[in-house]
Length: 555
Picture (tube, helix red, strand yellow):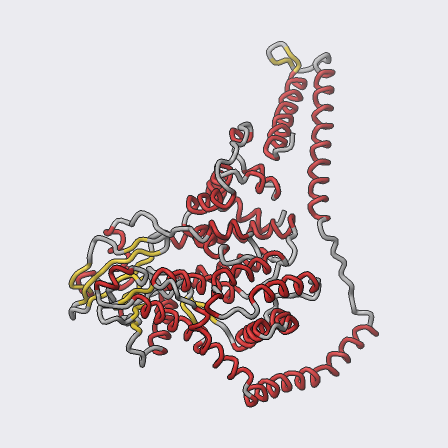
C-alpha cells in the first residue's frame, strides 16, 4: 500500500469513515472490496448482509455523491461529461446532479465579506439583502446595492468549504493511487483524472479567476448590443468574494414570459445558438454550463449571460482536428475522421483501428446525405460519445464539455422552437472555420511552424545520439524491469506470513505456559507467576491476531 495513502488515510480517518458509510448505504461495498479497504468498514456493518438495491446503479451513485457534499457533486458533474470513463446509463444519471444546498446563515456570510474586504459591510454597501438569491455547495449569492446606488450581486464562498474540499481532494488522490495500483485500468489514468479535476475545482473556487473570465467575455462582446455580460467591481472582489453587476430578466426557456415581453421565442432560440457558436467557432473560448439558469433575456430582448466559473477552451490544434472530423463526415471520408481522432490524441498506438473504423463508417452511413433539417445534434453527439466509450477513446476534456453544452443548447432551442436545428445555424460558422483552416496562407503558416519544429529536433538529434552512445560505451545505460501486479501479491504474502508467525508464537506461549504452571517458582493467587504472565501475553497476541483478521474482512 503506498506510504502517501497511509499518511492521508490516518490524517482524514473520520472523513474516510463517512465516505465508507455512504458507499455501503448505497450498495457500493464491492468497490471497497476491490480496493482491499474492508478494514475501514465498521465491524457492525460487516456482519450485516447487504440490502438488495432498489434503484439502478446510476441513481444510487447520484444519491451517494449528493450525500457526500460539494466535492463529490462536482466530481459527478465532471464524470457525466466523460464517456471514456463511465457508461452511458451512469453518465445520464450523473447529469441530473443538483448543486442546491440549504443556505448559510446570513451573519456568517456578512462576517466572511467583512473579513475579505477588511472593512464593515455598511462602508461598501448601502443595502445587503439577507435572503440569498441562490445557494450552492461552494458559493452563496446575495443581492446588494453599492453606496453609489449601483445594483449588484455578491457571490461569497461558503465558510469552511475550502477545508472540506481540500480534505476530499487528498482522499480522492489516495484512492486514485490505489485504483491504479490494484485495478490497473487500461487507457485511463485515475491519477491524471483526479489531478485535472482538482485543477478545475480549485479554479472554480477562486473568484479572481471567474472575474477574469467575465472580463474576457465582456471585452469580446463589447460591440454586440444584443449580448450583456455583467460588469465586475474589482475593488470589491477577492478570491472569496465576487461583486458584479446585477442583470435581471426571464429564463431563456420560459416561453410564456418571453411572449409577454413581446419577443418571438424562435428568434431568442436562434440568438442563443448564434452567440454560443460564435464563442466556439470564432473565439475558441465558450461558456461551459449554458443551462437556462445562466442564460436569460432582458426586457429589451438582449441576452444576458452569467456564471463563468466553468469555461471551455479550444486551441488551434484542437480546432484543426475538429475540422478534419467535420470534413471527413460531410465527405464520407472515414480515413480523415480517423486522422482527426489521432490528432486529438483519442487513439493511441495500441488501439485496433478496425473496429473503430467500422463503427465510424456505420455512423456516417446512417446520416450521410440527409438534409440538415433532418439531423439532430443531440442524438448525433450521443452516438459519437457511445463510440468513444465503447473503444475507450480519450477525447480532450474541453471537447467533451463542448459536446454536453451543445446538447443543452439544442434542448433549450427545441423547447422554444420545435423546428430549431443547431446544425443549420452552425453551417455558416463551420464553413468559415473550414475556409480559414484550409486557406493556403494558413496551411503555409502551419507548415512553416511544423518545419521549424522538425529542424530544431534534427539540430538536437546528433548531440542526443552522441550522449547515448557515450553512456552505452561506458556501461552506464540501465534497463529497468517492472513487474505489474507483483506488489499486491507480495503484500498479501507478507501479511499471511506475519499471521502464521504470530500463530506459532501464540501456540508456543500457550504450551510453554502450561508446562511452567507445573514448575516451582513465585506464586500468585496460588498459581505460578511465570505461567500466568505467559497466558496473559498469549491472550493479548491472540486478541490482536483475531482483530487483524476481522478488520481485513477475510475470515
